[in-house]
Image (cartoon, rainbow, N blue to C red; front, side, top):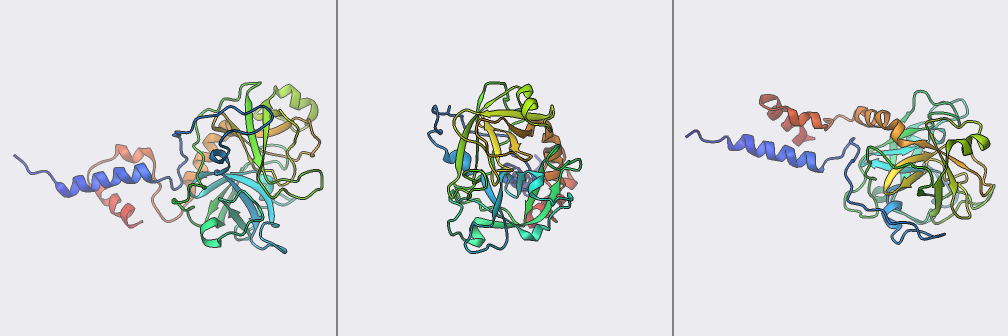
Length: 306
């Protein structure tokens, strides 16, 4: 009887473990999170499960205190990628900002809390704006690649599990959040605030928002409140899934419809962009599972070194 190649099977099992654990540059599709319906006029019983995905996007330098440099929100979609609005990362001429001037802070629900620069924040090392972005109008999406992964040991920081299709049926109740202004031209909130919203028909938004398109999502506040400056780039979460990103410019007038960029509509571009981020390592995809033989063994050594 031929003796099995122990070294080969050891390498094969190691590769499978890497696939099971790695999410570097790969969007997460599987979630064990279950949705809890919102209390009328309030929050979920365990809001922590959603806010741990949200990050504060800031300039590297602050004026007087850490946190006064916050300007947008974003959501972690992998251990090294943040999804946000394109207008957060571009100037009035649509020129992309310098990555090294952007800082992402995570795991802190209070904007003005002190934080550990090494454990609780990352610097951007690449910004990718949607190629067809029209300022404040269409395709208002961008992805930040962090200079290194978020810590895996912190339960208060987790990428959101992204499902292939979020339920965006009209009249469904969803949730959005951010550290935006408390009122028009007012101060930013210190604590992350949550707003219950109801999905509305596109015709409702078209009556109030000039730049509303078919691939956008229309929502209306369920309770008193509105999204303001500082909230832009934050998520729309519907039944545990990411449905959209706060986009465009909106005043803080209560009761107005709000526009979100649809995540399902842009999922392919987001997945491709995250996978195309080149970082000197091997991009892990499910296609690798179809490969075997000598190529598998040789590539495994690269993975182990990485």
